[in-house]
Image (cartoon, rainbow, N blue to C red; front, side):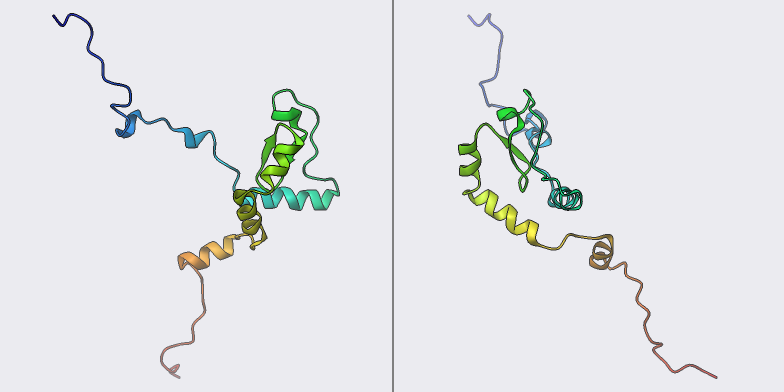
Length: 124
């Protein structure tokens, strides 16, 4: 009766971690500090950060680029629609915040080197 090969139904292993696709590795957006660095460099050089040479590999030839999110779009309408989206507005709000520095990170982790006054009077 059952001479055919046994196979699981599609999606039967979807909840097992080792069989899940790791799509977050390749579709991850740029971090806010990377984008802030790009914007600062553009201001220093005086050249806009969103100018690219024509490239067939990128959507729309690389001509429609959103600096705040770091994404390329196929045409001007798609870029205009993107600039009305919730994702774009949130990202702009994040970019307005002050950039994290090493000093801020050390302060948050409790690694600061504070000079405290002595707890008891100095003995002479």
